[in-house]
Length: 252
Image 1 (cartoon, rainbow, N blue to C red):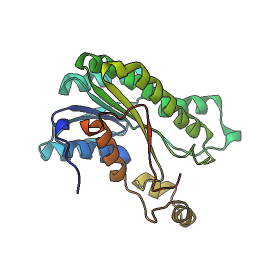
Image 2 (image 1 turned 90 degrees about the vertical axis):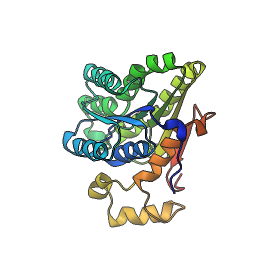
Image 3 (image 1 turned 45 degrees about the horizontal axis):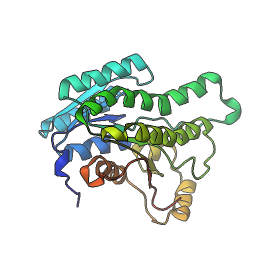
């Protein structure tokens, strides 16, 4: 049974990378709370399909196509979402890319690109919504990290470096903006069974490792991460800020 948080009704939520995977589950979860949901994604087809589905279900939703690594385009996309739905009081920084890469083959361009998609855009999305949250005297920002750097996962050094920095970003923003009633937390998912993970990375060998390492001997679903994010955005988490919450079935 999904909890209902009455304070989320009609709040304006912005989700980055909301067209698929965990992001789509987050969009659906906030839609279920009757929030007004805007989401940004670089892949237009699944995002438009999701927006159409939710609109048909009576949800106030807006999809804004954008490559978040283009900071000028990011700022414009955030402004368009606010103009369409109203001042943004909840931001979920979900967009990321976990492409594997060998350390010896990392170029300067690859490194900068991984930082841009996994860290830099989180800061500039937060920067874009903070003035409106300050004016409202409230706000919640949830940044998506990862357990990959905590468990020492190899094979994607630029990704794990960026995701470790999400915690530093979270704690800095929480400290600076708590005085305005703005809460900032991070959520670090473990191995979540999104279609992308199932298609690209989950093999019989990795399934054995998941079963060995997790306390919960089952596959974790995107909705389970979304439920934690919705809780952190709600007034039920009114004293929660400056923290990282791990959703990994007990691997760490």
